[in-house]
Image (cartoon, rainbow, N blue to C red; front, side, top):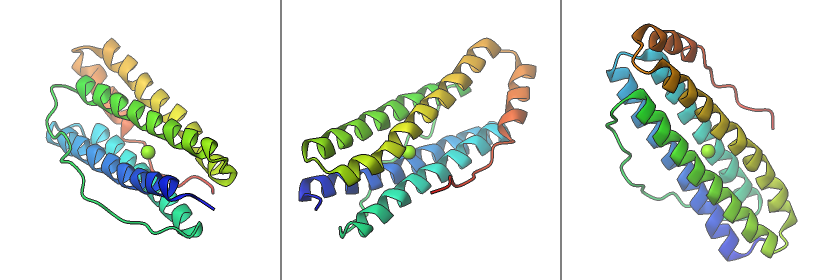
Length: 168
Ligand code: MG
């Protein structure tokens, strides 16, 4: 039986994942406006992933007999100074998400809620990947600096990213 407190935190995380999708859509729009369609594609796919995370939590809360409620969220940042700035902000955001997942897991552990601990393990592993993806693109952008040819090559690489829902 999941406590009201844990259910409330899971529900907050559902909304935070949707908020994450909004942040990445704002980044996708910024990149599109810079004529970097590959970068824009990267963030559109990222937004899809976030919606997938939200719905995974949504289905879990319903399965455990909880009531999901959807709330409003803050307006995401729409303007950035460079592609490096976009990815640095993205990494910063992912670090916040990781901390939230850790806090949720701590709460589930305090309550000895083993089903939820097991469920959240997927999110812990996912966060390792998310941070690593952002870190590796940041490294590339730092090396690229103001070489526009290299930037367009990375743009072409990021155009290849597609969203594949992970196996359940
Ligand atoms: Mg997420």
